[in-house]
Amino acid sequence: MTSDTSSPPRRLRPLRRLGTLAQLAAVAVVGVGLLTTVVILFSTGIGTVLVFGIGILFLVGALYLAWVAAWLEHERVEGLYGHGVPRLTVRTSGEPGFRGLMRTLWLQFTDGGMWRGIGSLAIATVLGWIVIGATWGVISSVGLALSPLSGAAGGTLPLTGIAVTEGWVVVGGIVGGLASLGILFGISLLDDLLTRSILVPSREAILAEQARTAGAQRAGAVRASEVERTRIERDLHDGVQPRLVSVGMTLGLAQQKIDSDPVAAKALIDEAHTSTKAAITELRQLARGIHASVLDDRGLDAALSALAARSHVPVALDIRLDERCSATSEAAIYFVIAESLTNAAKHARATEVRVVVRSRGDAATGRLIWARVEDNGIGGARVLPGGGLDGIMNRVLAAGGTATLDSPAGGPTALEVTVPCAS
Image (cartoon, rainbow, N blue to C red):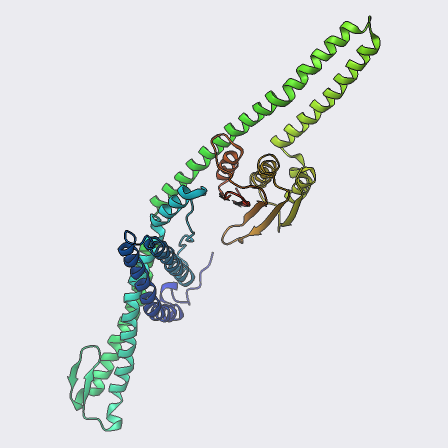
């Protein structure tokens, strides 16, 4: 592979340095406003939380304004330098109710990426004011060097305030201009270095996060398989098994009556035949719940259309997918929607369900499948160990995705799921 030795190193490219200085000058103004507002909101919230209780709102507002400030800093640094800074996302517990809200706020408050972004923004704000001062120093130095043309008898050396006599104003202007330009160049390099050190995680941190994520996915997969096994055992025990036992007993009665009462025996055989067909149907439904063959053959769109057609509750489908994703991702979305439709029919007493599925992201940021299932039922859904929603959450976690449930008493119930396309 050949390299272009005629171009300057990326770190020293003039346009990148000028872009850094321009952004730092803007951050000097915007950063002061954001950081000051965050501090004021935190101070007001702490001061009023015990008196009026309304201080909690100020604290929550300060927390998420701090996230916005950190997100802007992450985007600035990544857009300018391309360090590979991880994208900052809002943290959520995925749990419903007050406890889930408190856990979400705690996760957001303890998000190290957010606070690193705040620290980087604070440093960039200070550097930005230095840039503004040094820029004014360049302008003043040019004015000082050209002052003899206007007949001035002397001046003041920029950045220092030292008086310069008439014979030294040109030299002083040149020295002051070069010093100011040197400061500007040094600040641009310093911002590059500091943001890399603050915002780019170390290799050890990356490996630790990958290990944590892999552990969480493994635990979710194990838990999801346990929930699925329990569901299959329950369906077999409560549905197919009693029906097959009934078929056996009916055939036994028919065998006893086939000589003495052929008509009654025929009726019993017909009853057993009907029960056998019902058991086969239940077994097919159970097998479809374990693995949907149409999902492999025709994709998620067709599989969800077939699922909606079999639903006891009317389903409004809105699916827009750009391309096929991995089998794991599509299966996770399919079974999430299938379980949600089952819950809407059995527990929510819903009369309508709306399902929206979209492709999100791109090749650079990572493609995602996003789905939202909303019913008009009675609400009050909760994630209980071993329940259907528990299986949903763990299946999504095993696929590397996130799930959020919103189900207030009285409804409606909305479940949002995001799964990486290449799980």
